[in-house]
Length: 306
Ligand code: ATP
Image (tube, rainbow, N blue to C red; front, side, top):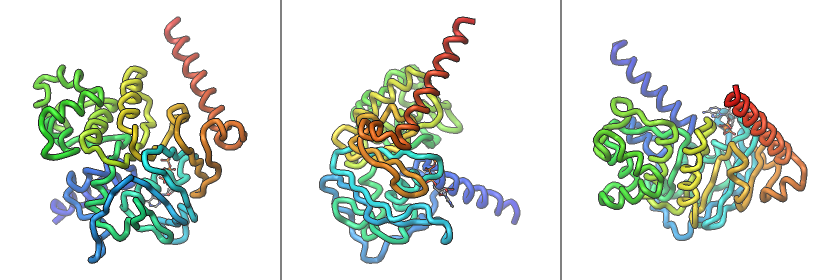
């Protein structure tokens, strides 16, 4: 019995880790063949996506009853616009993304996509409308082609290659032993963090959703991969409604709106320059980041001269 119990227990833990850390939400159900915790209502109908407008209206949420995580949160992202979520660790950024993907039900308020309450639509149609580029992509133990094509099963080989080119990963794949037929994942070729993120970008390009959720990597990538990734991300976010959980503020200076969260509430909101001018929490975070960048640069310079 213990032998049977152990793997089940392990799966449960792994599932929760994935759910908690916003790792590859799109494919986790497929990866683990797990039933989602949220069940569709019997009258649920498919989401009709027209423009990709996203709205949170007075949303409150807690994981544990006595600990509110989001309090009466309201914001709207117009079709094709980019909103960035920033704030201290634990302020609720990732929770907003999980709720939009409907991993949990809100306690009160509504989340609307093109005016439709996401509680009233099928989860399948909801997840089809949203593309996710997570911090850490879990790859299937299969070929690199399969892993990219997962974004739109049925896409042709040339569409898949095209997506890889746009995600700046094509050239790299050509250096793999069997090119697009190379086995990747835990039992195959191990890809670097930056490469895995580009696979996620290629998948999303192939899926071509109207809404994109982006969890910016906290781990630092080398400058070259960083540049490749930024260029590819700019391409997928163009003309799509985008929500970015941002860790480096330099990547969101062009966002249409920045929400600065603190303790589950919007503490400040505005565009980059407006927030800098108002000299509040965002301005302090920006100053801190500039100082960190300067001391990192100084450390690199010292290493190269010694
Ligand atoms: P970070 O920048 O560190 O990723 P965040 O702003 O994304 O943080 P969330 O992950 O949304 O923050 O967490 C908000 C709060 O909810 C935190 O206090 C966290 O401890 C709590 N929390 C997150 N996931 C769960 C969970 N599954 N069960 C209980 N509490 C949770």
